[in-house]
Each structure stands twice: as C-alpha cells, then as structure tokens.
Length: 195
Image (cartoon, rainbow, N blue to C red; front, side):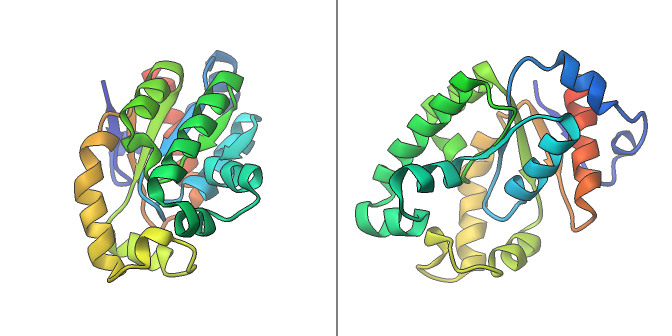
C-alpha cells in the first residue's frame, strides 16, 4: 500500500513524528527513489542526519568502486553495463542494512532491484513537477541521459515511462522548492504512519 503526501496536504504539517521514536522502531533501510534532480541525495543526507543513521548514495558507491564517474561508465560501457553494477551495489547495501540509501533514477525501474527494495527496505518515491526537475538538472552537466537532446523532453518522457514503477514505492512524497527540512519532516511522518 502506498501512502502519498503532497507539500500542500494538511497531514503533511500536522502531528509531527519524533525522529528518535521512528529511528528506534525502524529495522530496515530507507531507500529514496525517483527521477534525477528530485533531491534524493540532498534530502537523503538530511534525513539520515535527522534519524542518526548512515547515508549512502548508490551513484557515488558505483563511482568509487569503478574509479570512474557515472558519465564515464555510460560512455565506455553503456547503460546496460551501468545498470548491472547498480543492481549489485543496491543488493550489497540492502544486505548491509545501510540507514538511508539514495538510488539513481533508473534503479527502481529494474524489476529485481525494485523487488529487493520493496522486500527489505522502506521505498520512498520523491517526486516533483517537470519544471523543477529541468531547473535542478540544468545546474550540472553530469547527467548522461540528458546529453542526447532537449532535457525537458527527455525528463518528461522518463517521468511518463517510470512513474508506474515509482508508484510501487511504499510512500510517495511530492516535493517543491521549499526547505529540505520540510521534506525530511514529511518523510519521517509518512514512514511513522506506514510502520
């Protein structure tokens, strides 16, 4: 069952859950999923800090293990090769029960990876509007999937193609350009209600 909260939902601002109380009850990693630019890494770091848990970014783990950037891996070996490495890294992190995991935008699209995350973690889909995604992803030129054309069109297509997979996450949080601590609070409240 998916729980969904919008930044404008009354339940998103009432009944603040205690991060300490949640951390004591949480026996699995929190896995942030969603499109590139939605804020998985930034929000994930703050969420981990609030819950006093570790934080791991899957893309950074892949880069560290390969001693190459994600863009270099895509350019040299292609997306399929990258996704296979991503699958292995996510499986390892789920086995280690890392505290908060930020996945790459395509990780949750893979059926095996998605099944593992849904079984062993709390999947939180971070979502936002297309204009916000375009603005955020334009800040860096490190997104290999956006290099082949119009970023707005590519992101719109990815959003359409991937939304059904993302919708399988346990929790759905729609973010906006508000403060990150507000998104963190809403995630904590949603997980608290889901548990």
